[in-house]
Image (tube, rainbow, N blue to C red; front, top):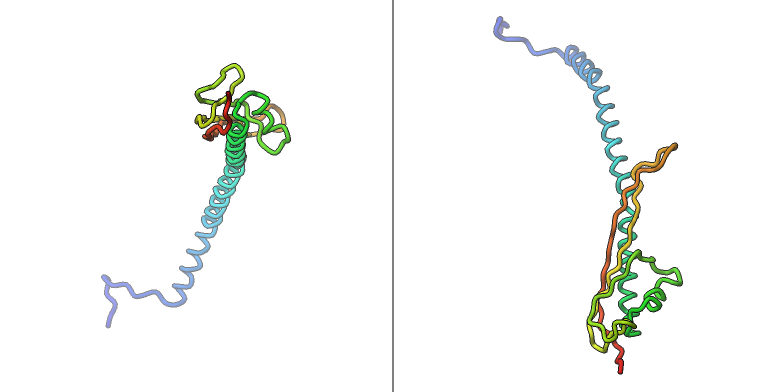
Length: 159
């Protein structure tokens, strides 16, 4: 069979080998750049997760503190400053920035809650997230306000 002008003969083994080498040589720099960009993206995502980790741990700690404060108010039947601060004074729980108790008070001045009266303890805290901390100058900080709440029912009868 004669090869005409319209048909090309298939490349020989030697020609295919040369084309493959030329293709690999042309693609190597592009492969390195792809790997470098992928590694950069992965490290950026990991750094972002590490920067956001304090928010999640603070939220868990705040939830635990709110539940414990609600239980303390249930047992003592009052939500005065001394009762609420007794929860965080030993250092085991997070000290919140603000504490709010919503209920129908038996005695508003002493913040007493009557037996079987429902209440909600809501606490809030501001957590700073450092975005950028340059060697010279102030760091770039974003303050995130988180809150937690817990419900309870008073177990103390006031006469």
